[in-house]
Image (cartoon, rainbow, N blue to C red; front, top):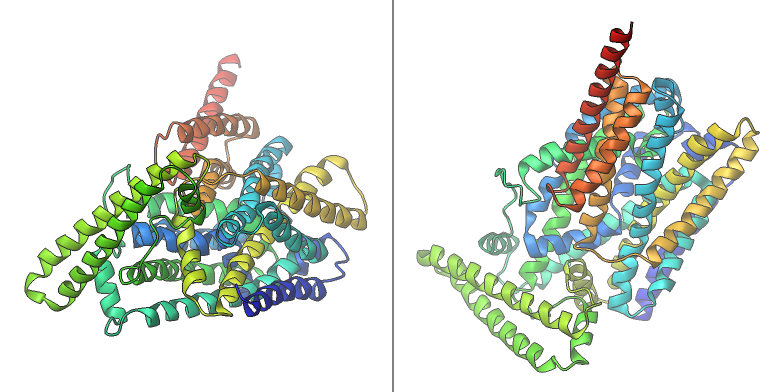
Length: 560
């Protein structure tokens, strides 16, 4: 990184922190701090909802996911527009009518305090872990690529977010997210344009798509019912709908965004705006990853994009084996370039050239897997899954000065945006659902101070989780897996509250505990792809609660 990159990076981040703190200073009560004084317009709500979900993981992991696996991941989001319509029709009018600060307040009025508390605790556990991962995700990757200290990065990201979130609450989160989304979209569009400009002369966008398609990267839809495939049309439209219903309808980090709306209509329009824009946005981010793939068909790429992996091998006895694989990689790349040229020019043998290209891609994949084995032999602690490193490697090695700083600002802005929403929601839930409900009546000033204190405490806890976190298969999948373990159960509790009026609190409470244990066991033993856990958990808690209530009624009648 050059001086110009440092200036752009630090200037962007400082502007967000200072602007957010200044613009939203002086919250007078809990209404201002938690619900932003109910002043948000629909476009602010829409961008804030989108920014809360679009963390740094989205912009680091999603292009890498597309690089390795193609466009199929977009199916994950197919259920989101359906969920937005349901939430606009059912959830939003009810929340506004009851004038709740958190989603879980409603559960007490429908059931009882223990059910409200249980749902709030489920949220605090999964979102507390997610907040730490949201900080950890960009920190570990930037640490590996740039050589920065990981703990230092975790602390810096966490502290920057804490400053303006503690100061301004919900309004600070919403105000800064508009600026962050502007930076994020600008950076991604510039990166996309530059990738296309770096392709060889004569390789237009349409030809790049053709190359990607021939390589199996443009297969968007999969209508199979294969449970071994995580991302299909059906898992997205069914499992994705239930995940989105749970996330946007019952997760306080999202509910708090649209509870700040000026009216029901503003909140509904904000969510519909998110529903219309989210799938195209994710499609575009995946397309960026596919174009990075096409770029590396004409340019040399490392065997493993994690720089720590290569360092581990270079300093080991396995260096010669690794160099042999590097040589084979170079040979495959040369042959792929020749095959691509034939595929584009020789229209009489299109099918044969496509088969040859797919065979070379398989050979390259096998070569990379062998490299992973050698890396693990050299150092078991090094992360060999390099999906999360692909895009940042491209940024640092190919973009001009200044734009590197901008793209790093995009990644860190996204991390700050999501983390701010999460800390804000964690603090609100702790202050309103646990502290205020169990401590008793205090002054508005007291609850305002407590809300700020809980924001600070959750921020510190998120930093600690980030410092002790571990890297899994793929960061964007990890966050969704954590959510899927809890979301289906919580959604089922809310659906029971909304629609199954004869089910009472005790049946719901017992069913929720049993369901959570079963879902965790199911995830641990990999009973199904994680997206289906949302439907499974939701259906299970509702079925068990109905069964318990029905059994209780029969028992009561027999006694009578």
